[in-house]
Length: 509
Image (cartoon, rainbow, N blue to C red; front, side):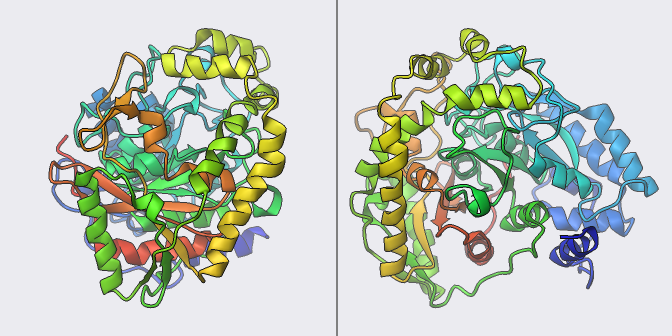
């Protein structure tokens, strides 16, 4: 696609070609500073800068000040203050232009940035500087987005709590209750958005790492299509993200609203931004197994959201995906704990940081849960199981999903993103245990990714959006999954669902 046609598409996606009606924007509302009002969207911020109602410098300065004020949340590992303000001045002077010109974003610290360290949240990579930006990030920068910092994360992305015990990182705290996790592994990006530092940013997703933190912090997270790679992979960031699994990993946009996520997706893919889909007559699969065993406080919220969908005319198809969890359990760890053996060295070589080895990384891991996972990796505990997992079991899982969509004539699958709201932070292990409805404590990792992991292994897209708040004031997420390549449809459905569910109230931080 030529530069001119790509620029026209992005302008259309933003509504810039036809113009956008804006509400007046105040300086403090841009960074969602201490106000009770709803935050401005990314598109509104960009348009206001373009119309010179505000300056890029004021927007970026507000984001930096908010980040500094809320530093105890540990949302960011690296604050790119001077470079971000310099870029903002270049936007205001007209030196930097583009459909995202002046928009502040944060980027998860396992996504390569050539002008900032890319640490993966782990000591061995604390000073690592890759030679290039990740391709998905580069497209946002080329469009004028300004990276104000690198977001904290679960160490090496091997977990869903973001309780990072590396001395330069620290546990990320949920802004709705700072004694609780924000989810992970993209917890820092989620918290930066939920707490009003920025409206959107980038995370990564291997087994739920954009969607779980989105659900627990009241924002939106997209896992794009991966399929079997190649043309079916929506974002191509090969060897540009500190990896877990080339089969499962993907960069994913996160935002305060579905529109924010759809905007970033349109820029990254060079396609027209998704439009809202009419929910009337849309068919959603509701697998009973994914709706079972829910924490009561969460179930009340997702049941209410489900009723809103039926009231809007959506058709809910109560049909299970037979054998899904059993099949997924057989292939998940063999893929995720074998592929790093080759993928991490390949990443280090491609990023120009070959002086650091897989052994170096493993030796310096700070978080006990991650150290345990790397013990299995370095011993290749799943080496013998890997060929069957990747060659036989994963194709079976993909066919199971394909037949479920086809046989039931579904537009999407509807599921609670997590089966419980955010559990307490466990600084002893990094990932502790959670009890559902007062029952026997279960591993937090396995419990919180129960519903997100199967779709990850199948390579299908998933979108988590805000569904409501528990009685105790914790956000709850609802997810829609679709066939490979249905990302734009999912975003369109999400735009309409968001109108039914509303936005999360701002946290009191």
